[in-house]
Length: 65
Ligand code: SF4
Image (cartoon, rainbow, N blue to C red; front, top):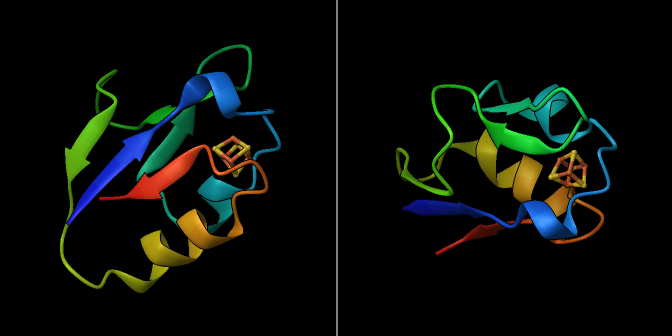
């Protein structure tokens, strides 16, 4: 599956990294991928931690494609 980030929707709440270390933050707290600055990434299917992060993002700044 693919995960997409929409940094313009992120409110820097810090929740997503508590679910999965796929997610990290810029200095201003806005979400990024831990490994690089891309906005879309292929991840293993059915990774429950990532799915939880996406479902619990309060502003839908994370999506599963
Ligand atoms: S959970 Fe959503 S709003 Fe909060 S830091 Fe992560 S992407 Fe941003």
